[in-house]
Length: 182
Image (cartoon, rainbow, N blue to C red):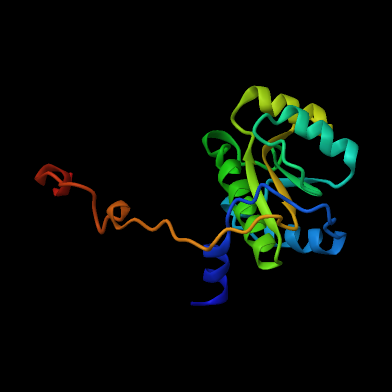
């Protein structure tokens, strides 16, 4: 299997971390991977808030009920609404920032680190709490927090492939009316 597929299968949610810090150069490599994600019409509507100091990390943990892990670094992935597409395509920022988040998770795995994705958007209470905790202006919406560190637990690689969830060409039956030209 190619190296990237190995990393995809090795990527697991790690929730226990050692106290060893993640150096700035490694975080920058991870962010570079995040920013290599695809985005609708290349808008790149992402912004990232990196937390590595104790007090900001504690503020974030207080507001993330399901994210009270003790990692030495957290990347808060945000959508910049000033860069989002206009009109009905505006919410593509969620897909764009989700792709960046997945790249961050894979980069962390490839660099021998552990990470876990904590969802924030679309829960209003979480968005407000995280925005206050990290000082976000109104045009930045927090999508997720990615806790990153040296893993204090190991999990075996796995696939969750389920052939019952794969459909070739169509799902179910198509009526003759659906195939006739109008």
